[in-house]
Length: 104
Length: 330
Image 1: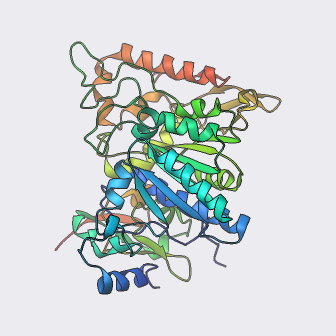
Image 2: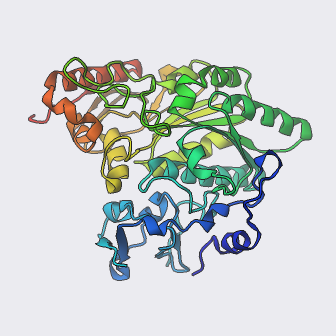
Image 3: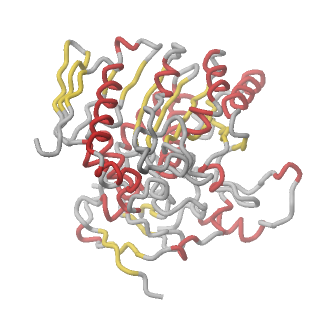
């Protein structure tokens, strides 16, 4: 599955400039995708597909959003943006998501 | 077979914004824009028929750091006090242009309960077709956790520090939803990210109404509430289950026919006809308080927790409900 923000990332990489615009208008919607906030992470969600019952709770709660859905409805974790808050792991009813310490 | 997700997979809130990890308000705004786009699709056939006027506040600051924006919808940043006024203007312009859609005004509890209250009142009274979403994280988190009039009794903030002569915030929480209901507008509701499907349903309902609507949603703030990152949604859910946060809907200011959603968590709800008259909560408010560092000092002052319990009971009484709140040992 592809990130729903793929087009936004490509556009922002190509067109975004730091130049001041009249009225400070921002012309590229969703251009914050250029900031890879995954570097903030201390704990990383690890997903066990076998335990997942596709309740979509992690997908609903993710504040980033760093979780999107694949064609079968399973969550895909976008580690470029996941800040590692752990809400998904805390709310997962089947404990299919586990937070492990990030090793870099 | 694959079940459909309970909400659209369209996103209007992009990642890469600067909100703290575990921000409950980010979840709320993401869900709200998704729900509003579903409402617009069902009402006008165009999921993008909305625009946003956003008061200064946490979510404005983190989502729109020049030259970036996290928004994928028409969005305007306005000052702290006039989100409702600017939304009124956009709505009037859309009406003149014959453009169909809803305007979403977003403000935090500071921008709504304190600074933007008169603009909000004016907007509601002029009957603009605007949905005002108040994301309530119960203090000015953006500027460094100062108290607002929406801060609950007993909470620590940097301007209500607890100590020998202070319990922290010493006044009851102001309920802006009830002030909005006093305008007799078509729709007023409270919600919480602890019950996301209820929140989505309320935003969809509010979005489809012609005329003003007001939704107040409780969002957890791990930074300002001094709570663990991963417990955000759990705390918001406990707020409902312990009775701290009521979920209700008031239509046309008719407080006598207020609709109260069952709190869950084993609470018993007693009705007379369609009216909820009594709720027996099973979880004590201590379960909600103990997860948050901002209430830590209260556990050395049992009389302050008792006072908070009385205030929660008084708030339920305003809604016409007798609330039975247990103590931990019971």
